Image 1: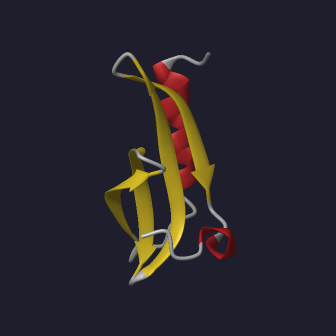
Image 2: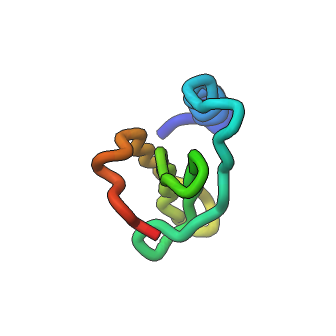
Image 3: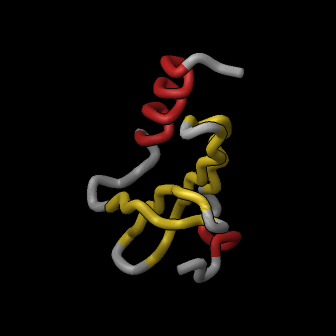
Length: 72
């Protein structure tokens, strides 16, 4: 398990790969809360959160647009 500050640093590091025009929206991923990164109408990245007792216990990030298809 990682401390919240390490997870926050990791997530902040991922942001540097986004373009200034990218938009982040809250979405549902496999029935759980998540974030979607959009370039216009195209979904380019997804972060899904696994919850355990109202806390995030796992973060999965996919930044491969071809693997994402049309999830939403």
